[in-house]
Image 1 (cartoon, rainbow, N blue to C red):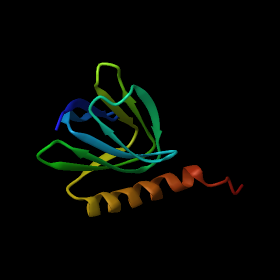
Image 2: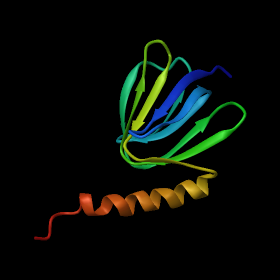
Image 3: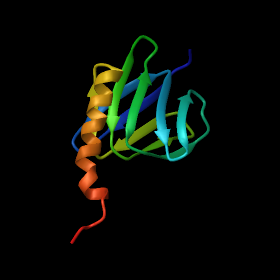
Image 4: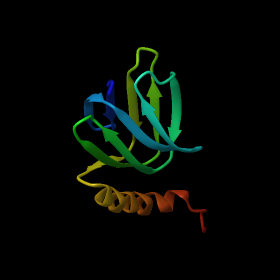
Length: 112
């Protein structure tokens, strides 16, 4: 399967930089999968689980709101203010629940 370069960045660090075969993410419009030769796009992602396939392994991440940029040269960049790698999809679900708890006070109406 054809690969393409991906970088995953948070304000604090680069979490991933390498070649991937697919990215599976959740946008405002629903789940999407990015393959090599995808059309250029900038996509808003909601807090969710990100799946990154490298051809030999699957990596999981839980993230807050993020943006995914696919460039004309075939590269992709994912930017998230809060993103954590997980060893499995189940652990990513747990981390995502923690992210939702962290964000809840910021998203609820002010009670004062």
